[in-house]
Image (cartoon, rainbow, N blue to C red; front, top):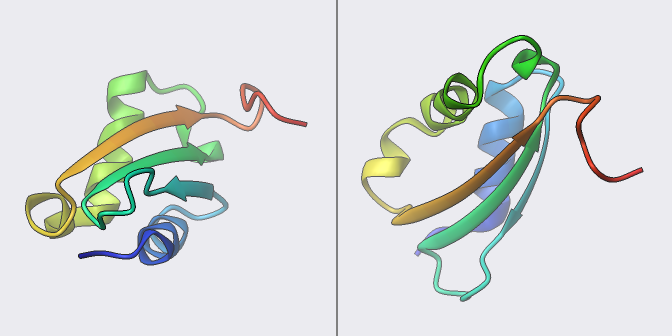
Length: 81
């Protein structure tokens, strides 16, 4: 079982100036959803944005994190005020 706050901490540590919002909707410690906003995503396509997040999480994606639904945004495309 893995903690959503730890996922948030890792992403925000590995991707400078980013904000991550992580949910564990099923409260099972395995299936997560993350919304990540970062200036590092400016000018790169969606696949590369997701790859940056997966790289930040590293081996966790092959172990404790069973599934991660991911949405990435640049600061200009973040849908919330």
